[in-house]
Amino acid sequence: MNTVEKRYAFDSKISAIISIADNISNMLLSPIIGYYGVRFNRSRLIGFGELLLAISCFITAMPYFIYGPMTYSANEENHNGMFSPAPSLMAVMIGNRTMANNFQMCNLFPDTEKCEDNRGSTVWPAVYMLFIGNFIRGIGFAIYYVIAMPFMDDNVPKKNSPIFLSVMQCILLIGPAFGFLFSSFCLRMFEDPWNDPGISINDPQFIGAWWMGFVLVGVLLLIVSLPLFVLPPQFKNAPVKAMTIKQKMAESGGTKEAIRRFIKNPLIILFFLGNTTRYAGIIGYYMFYAKYIESQYRQSSSSTSMLIGTSSLIPIAFGILSGGLFISWFKPRARTFFIFLFLVEFVSVFTMGSGIFLGCQPIKLANENELSMNNSFSLQSSCNSHCECTTRIFTPICDTKTETTYFSPCHAGCNSFDALNGTFSNCSCVVNNMTTKGYCPDDVSRCKTNLYTYLIIMTIGTVISSSSKTGNFLINYRSVEPMDKSFTSGLVSTLVSLFSFVPAPLLYGTIADSSCLVWETKCGKTGNCWLYNQDKFRIVLHTVTIGFLFAGSLFDFLMIFFSDRMKNLYEDDNESENDENHSNQVRKDDDGNEMETIQNNN
Image (tube, rainbow, N blue to C red; front, side, top):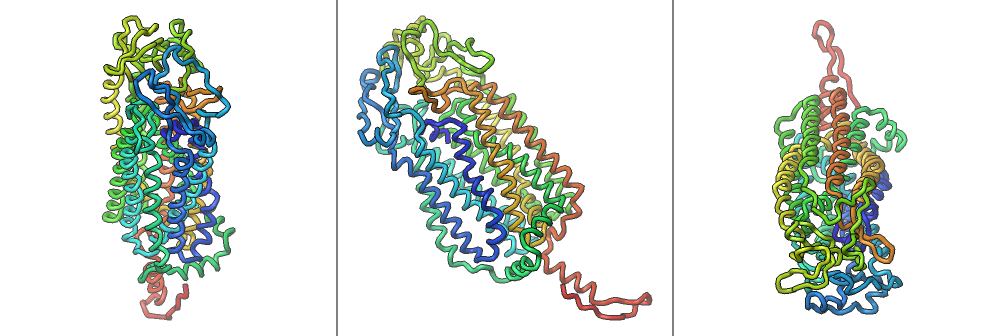
């Protein structure tokens, strides 16, 4: 998302709105899908959900095919000896955003930009397409969680259900893990892979091929969805019969009674409250995790994708599988089961707390003493006041003697650039004229130790806490009647989306934006954030997340006292009914003589 922010010039709040689009559709449609979905062929409904996911991928990639790649104007010949064609008239008309030049030099090219074409401002049609694509994606995910997961649980024995649930969740996470690895590969290529923009991958202006993964995944989902339309509505020897579910639903009093059963179930209410608070922290944190890694530890988008894929999603998959195997093999009793879930979830409170102390020393910026209490930051000083510098382009350079980073050559007062050795000269703000491109080397190297320590601790916490995920699914399915599984899943999904998935990204987007030091500005309009207040971003991000995780663990602790309400944790419903029938068939008198046989019609 950070790459798309830079490409189409929008801030973190707009990113948050785009990101919650899938939660909005999930919130609106999950109860409807859950209640009415079981009345149809669930296999075909799952196939339709996969088809929607494919369509959403194509819509998300559409802005690239409409607006094309980022273009560079012809001013670079005066700075680095490179020539780039000016954008076409059509590109300008449709809003193709242009980066004016690689290096903004002092007073060489005064800010005489024409604002009529709105280049550099937010490309709103692209934002709308990204929102719509994510909205449709939410419908597909709703079908998966509300229909596909209960469908699997209905078609396997309960004693094997933890294994199947954990495997399905692992597969669900392995896909994004490979997605992050593939995106790391794609983001190393320019947005147009067949053209070289002439800038380094570590340049803050660099825009990778963000669209490529969506196209590939969309094609694969389209292929996978087709066989699902020919699967039977129920597999042979399924322990829970589809017709039985439909019959019980017809006799249960409809939606009103289902909601009443939900409200009167303290276990499912505590489960909902715990998920709401916990996922508010998890969703908000991981939504801005990549942005945090990039800004805090000064990593490129491609390396950040690689780090997230290897340190987050793969360990989560391992933890889920381990938790499923533990529950399946040891089959803990209900109270032990809930104590286990509480302990492993509570670990994340401590591991998240480590992030407060494992930050990176802030960049030593020129004019950093002008940072005020209201977080305003001035890049202007007496030595560059004549340069007419802007914040359209972030091209940091380093004063190697003082290890001070300047926002751009213009803000260092530089008038010339030597392309052979990558140094700037005639810099009015630098006494010895010893400047190089990029961040100061020490600023980058001293971050690595804390970065790797942080990732290791977070990975350990992720493995431990994710071992509870299979147990959470079992709570959702075993604490309600079989006929209510899909409806309860849909209702919980809606309520969690309403109170967690939707507001949390907006809250965390506000946190990110409030930590911004320097915004991209052009024609009086604000784009993405170039530089963050590292200490504020780190402390507030982790403190708020810890609060949500602690509240979620508190509700987990309360569930322990209602654990006796969860029945048939590992036993199929037909098995328990047969046992009850057998025990009620024969009644005996006090002498042990058989008196009568009672037919149990339940």
